[in-house]
Amino acid sequence: MLSPNTDNRRLFKWRPVHGVMIAIALMAPLLLTAWLGGAEALQRVKHFPLSLLVLMLALAFTCWNLNAARLRLMLGGRAGPLGQRGALGIELASKFALCATPGGSGGPATLLLLLAQRGFPAAKGAGVFLVDQGCDLLFFIAMLSGLVLFSLVSDTQWPHQALVQWALVGLALVAALVSIVMGFLPRLLRSRSLKAPWPSRYRRRWLVRRLLRCRYALKITLSLPRTTLLAMMLLTTAHWLMRYSLLYLAVLGVGGHADWMWTFLTQMLAMAASQFSFLPGGAGAAEVGVGGLLLPLMERDQAAAAVLVWRLVSYHLYLAAGAPLFILYSYRLLRRSPTA
Image 1: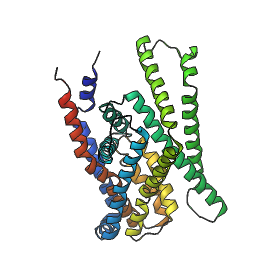
Image 2: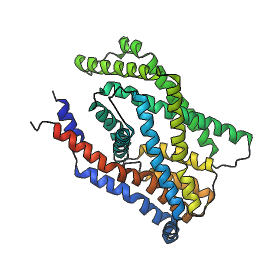
Image 3: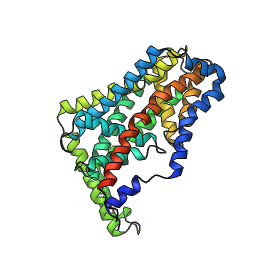
Image 4: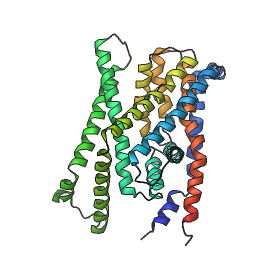
């Protein structure tokens, strides 16, 4: 059986295909901008107001720190002393892995591994990760509910309004499914209908123990003081309102006009669709999705330029900021692992 250190080396093992996929993901926004908007789009990017660009960078930096503060609240000291600087390092390294892997699969794994290095088991870390995702889910359900209600009582004239309503239904179903599974997990694990020849009895026990630990960590995190839980939701709200304002600022910078609420919905829908892309960071799908939803409201070159600036700040910047920390943590982890 493989040791944890062997698993760590496998996690951080680099293959040439990874570099090729990241290179394609980095080039995708530029290629799509040139194809969709041509030279006019590149000229709009070249003349993008410096003040707006600085504001977008400041918002991105603030978002990183908000997420780091939320991580500290969720852990509640259970991973040892963790200051804002340490939490920010974990946040950026995890976000780099999220952006550098298809479907963001490397993000949760990196987060759990870095927490495990601080003495917080991966099974319990999974419970904290579920709380993190639950906060995001609650925020998006609340936002979508408000936006659907707003679109019904006012003359918004948004294109594709049915997408908003279906997105709300999808989020509600996901939230209900996760809540039911975690609430009835012990009963589900005892159910005879779930018994199968695979995995083996040892693997089933291993999986059951970790699922139960995850559920226990989830309960412990949710039992934090109400003021702490409220602070977590406030940080979540502030983070996503700032993060999803980046596209609106990009649209303004290229001379376009669109409602902030529509740019918010555009990012939500496009980033959800990008999960089906095989490229890191949903490259290709994210740009096409956002560009397609912006086209009814502005010229092709404006939409293409806005998408490029938005991706530079919301994707490439995360890679650039997180890569050094990811490499540093990887080096430290592999250095501790025995070579044999």
